Amino acid sequence: MKYDTRSITIGLIILLSVISIYMYLTSPIKKNYDLQAIEDTLYKGDRIIHDGGFARGLCTQVNFKDYPELDEKTKEMDYILGGEFPNKHESCLKNARLVKLVYEPDLKQAIAVYRCEYNGVGEELKVSNYQDSCDYTQYLTKWNFPIGKYTQVPIP
Image 1: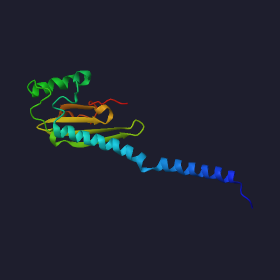
Image 2 (image 1 turned 120 degrees about the horizontal axis):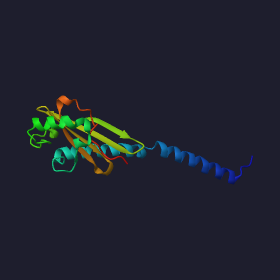
Image 3 (image 1 turned 180 degrees about the vertical axis):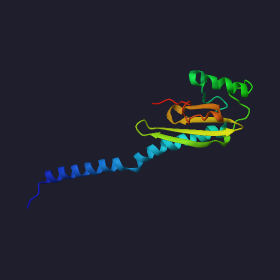
Image 4 (image 1 turned 60 degrees about the vertical axis):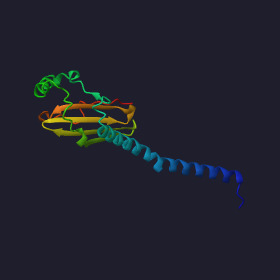
């Protein structure tokens, strides 16, 4: 039986192509890209909390006036905090814990939400790996503020 070298060459090229595509689709490098986005987001959140970046204005402060349903709550918080909203004197964010982590594989975007509560006032920080964005707010713990609802980060 005689084999045609051209047929063998074409067969080897097809076989190598199939193996290459399979290796690319299942490679740890591709999977690590997703993990890298999550890791970057968590690192950024920890860095902002540790360095106090939210207090230095690196993060956007939630404007409750953009949410009509929070109008009365804002007045209540101003009254309780003596007109100092947001309350910059007693931040507990250094002790914040990660309460929500979301990864959107289609957008390659990871979002982390950190929270803490102290003396009836809660603080929330939302961080994203997209455009180095973060958003910060304070709220009264009795409001049962939904996690991540009012803190926003841009979406690609």
